[in-house]
Amino acid sequence: RFAPRFAPRFAPRFAPHHYLAAMSDEEVPMGGMGDEMGDDMSEDMDMNELPDGVQKEIIREAPAGTFKTPKAGDEVTVHYVGTLHSDGTEFDSSRSRDKAFTFTLGKGQVIKGWDVGVASMKKGELAKFTLAPEYAYGSEGHPPKIPENASLVFEVELLDFVSKDDLFGDGGVIKLQVAEGSGWKTPKEKTEVRISLKISKVDGSPLDDKGSFEHLIGSGALPMAKAIDKALVNMKKGEHCQLTCSKEYVGDSYPDGAVLDLILEEMYEMMDVSPAKDQSLMKKQVKEGEGYEKPKDSFKAFLRVESATDSEGKAVTGFAAKTLEFVVGDGSVCDALEFAVTEMKKGERAILTAAVCQEAQLGLTQEGQVILTLELEEFEKAKDTWDMSEEEKLEFGAARKDVGAKLFKAGRFQLALERYKKVADLFSYIDNYKEENKAKAAEMKKVCTLNKAACQLKLKLFPEAKESCNVVLKDSSDNVKALFRRAQADFGLKNYMDCIRDVKKVLEFDPQNREARVLAKDAQAGQKEEDKKSKGLFGKMCQALGKGPIPEPYKEKKFDLEDEADMADDMEVDESAEKGQVEQEPAMEVKSDGVAAAAGA
Image 1: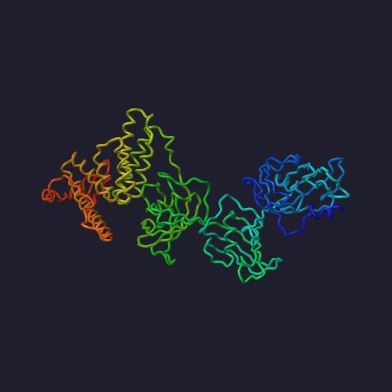
Image 2: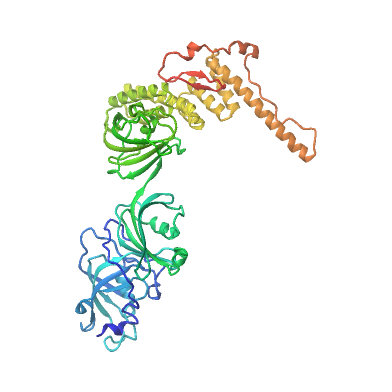
């Protein structure tokens, strides 16, 4: 036969064991062929534009929706018929032998025209390639069948290809894809996954079956974790691969190396759903939900709470499983469930670990960590704000502002903050509103922005509170509440002089404002303390230099208020005033630590 004579250049130099796998049509075709090319593939080739010496004619297109092409290092399987371009004489055919031909793409195992041409094909495609001599057998030819400087024609059908990668670039771990996964997500470092693992010798004889188990990527819990983790971070759910590993990657238990049969069965997405991102509320997804949409503010949610355990895994006494029906953001359920449901999809199941979760509807009244099993059964969308008329937006904004006020009074400041943010954002652009609606929208935006600042002060988000006040003061520079709350934020940031400046402006508008006077005195005390620290630090620096006398770092700035005796008379704050009726926006109170804060809503 003719094929063996082509062994040095055309036929494969070795026949490695391989699997034929159906490749997913969902992936975007890969571009260049990488840096793993042999001598025959040293030139950079764009597979969308074949070189002049390789002419391609597609005889039969690949099946609809198929667009992935093989890359360098992949094992490809083809049928072919080779003829001379000069007279059409057939010199080789896998079809006549009824045996498909397999080789590794881009490694110089075949003539250059094949490495270039096959890399441009899709699975199921049938094409005719006309190769110039420099992409075939060149000036020497391959006697007696192929003369020197001969152009060749190959009819090639790409039957299949198997993704194969050298994970570390040293030949120590070769990944062979057996079955493509689904979707587009791949796990990351510190992701918890469930995998199936079997271990065998290089000759295929079994060594160990680990079965299905959970594994944390990056934990190093397995002796062959380095190889497994490297493969996992590029795998999709359901993907099946084989890792042929040298002994350096599987440990001393396998001195001759081993083959790892690995399946990624599930990815458990971990998410910090706490508003402060302090890991006090962690959601572990154990079943992926449908689509992409999640419940938003004012959506109606149907959340099934199936079980509750404590930190030791014991069932919580008094817990009763239940499907909760509630409007997201209204505060009808505890904060833990409010924040968790906004990060779930329909049908999703999750394990929620909450530092605090007290929900009377479920019989959860104890303090301490609670671990809940949740499923979002359904949610009903509310009308989108962009579909609302101006009047509907004003009505919706007023209703959500009232919800924010109720939450603020209940001390649920984070939930209240989210409501105020939504309303303020709703009226971020009102230039095209009718005049009568424009004034109402501007007023509501101002009130909700001030209420945002009040919530942010309660949550000690001082930079954010200051920015909220600046938004109001940009349009209304004499707004007393914005000035006072900005002063509170500056006090929290220890910007005492800025605090004092704003308090002075407040007192110019309202000389009898007791809360402002208290804040001014506290700011002066804070500034004096900072001055002492600065003076002490300066003194130590001078002593270290052996210099003296020590000058004052700077002259202390005085604030023009009534004398301290008069101020002391005003220090008593009327308790009834602190408990006064709720206004359109939070009122002001005096904290026991001297920091004034917004109180009502």
